Each structure stands twice: as structure tokens, then as C-alpha cells.
Length: 82
Image 1 (cartoon, one colour):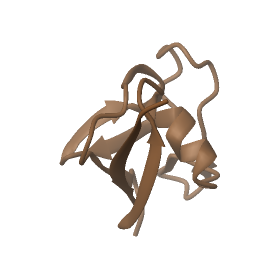
Image 2 (cartoon, helix red, strand yellow; image 1 turned 45 degrees about the vertical axis):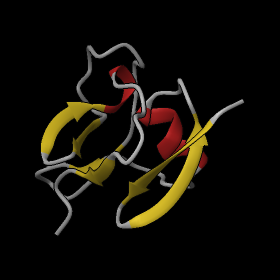
Image 3 (tube, one colour; image 1 turned 180 degrees about the vertical axis):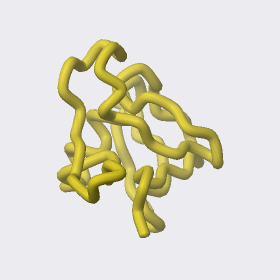
């Protein structure tokens, strides 16, 4: 099992290579991916990219956490945070 280093909400983490960003968020204890326009926390729902609830900002670009594999030195931020 190879571990890779990345940053989630400004905190360093090591996760297993080959997992999705959604899985990394869950393993790191993050309970939601984004805040909706009505200020409600939203988390992955469908796990296959249809619902769009797992949108996060990865290296400055909005992406779906359930469809994106973790890469070394990736910087992940939750969307809609104030």
C-alpha cells in the first residue's frame, strides 16, 4: 500500500494511492464537500457523478470528488465555504 501526501482544507493528510477524493474526505473526517447556496452542508450522494453534490475545489478547479482520484500534492478545498 503506497501512501500519497495531499492537503484537505489546509491540513496535510496521507491517503492510500488510488482512492477517490470523496473517500479521502471521508477518511479524513470531513463530513461534507460543499455548502449550498441556502447554506446547507452537502455530501456525496450518488457516488457516480450524477448528483453533483460532491463538488470540491482541487488545485483551484471545481471537480467532482467521487470521480477524481487522489494525486500527490493535491490541494482540496470544500466549495461554498465562507
